[in-house]
Length: 87
Image 1 (tube, rainbow, N blue to C red):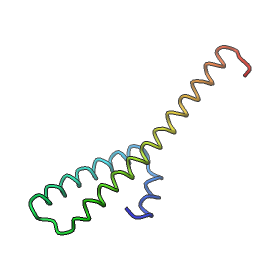
Image 2 (image 1 turned 90 degrees about the vertical axis):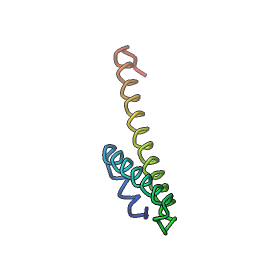
Image 3 (image 1 turned 180 degrees about the horizontal axis):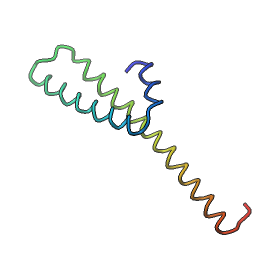
Image 4 (image 1 turned 120 degrees about the vertical axis):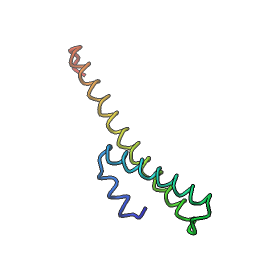
C-alpha cells in the first residue's frame, strides 16, 4: 500500500475496512496458490499483500478500540448520574 492508500483507509468505515480485509485475504490465498504452481514471477507481491492486510488490521483495531472506549466512557457517565454523585 502506498502512503496515499493508507491515508484513504483511515477515512473508511469499519464495514468498508472489513470488506477490504476479506478481499485482501482472498487475494493473498490466490497469490499463494499461484506461487505454488509457479505461475507468479513477482514474489514481492506476496509481501505487499501481507503488508496491506497488516495495515488494514491495525486501522481496524484502532477504530474498534476508540469505539469501545467511548462506550465505556458513556456507561461510566450514566452510572454516576444514576447514583447521583457529583464527581
